[in-house]
Image (cartoon, rainbow over all chains, first blue to last red; front, side, top):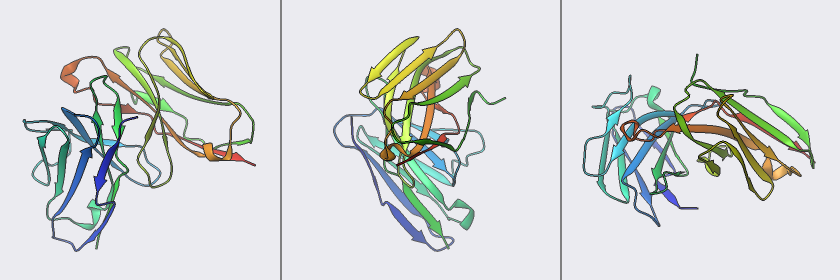
Length: 114
Length: 114
């Protein structure tokens, strides 16, 4: 299957700082990428849909000014958590959709906000 | 009522057993059905992807979709301890306006004991 990478895999930051997470499709082009959030023992919760060259579509309840998404190329989307707080600590996972409409997930980024 | 229902388990079986995992859904517009495997603290891995009703087989895995009953299943034959993971069902609409976002079940935790 196709490969999606995420960087960093684990980040610890102080409250009030901003953190950027990168999601890359390594061997295919993805016009659409998705960002999810997963709390322990919970399923994935869709945060936003990221389309290359246009603004992201956020799910209800997700603050677009807090979770900035940029999809500048067909292989890269970034999620920036601005002014992070402890309640933002979670496992963030991206996925990329290929031209056969299959979604492939990255390995996830564990964010811990102190 | 959630759109996708999945028993979280845990499900414990002896090595070599046949495992049956199931999901039900309420939205008859879902067209694409997937099963993902997720190991602890890792991103989900796509196992099976189906579009129509019927069976699809890949090695020890068989995915079954019954659109009339809004019911999907994943069967694992000759289960191995390495199959121990959380299995997530997911489905999406065919409408491009939805961005092909996935709707996930809660995931079923499977433990295969030696």
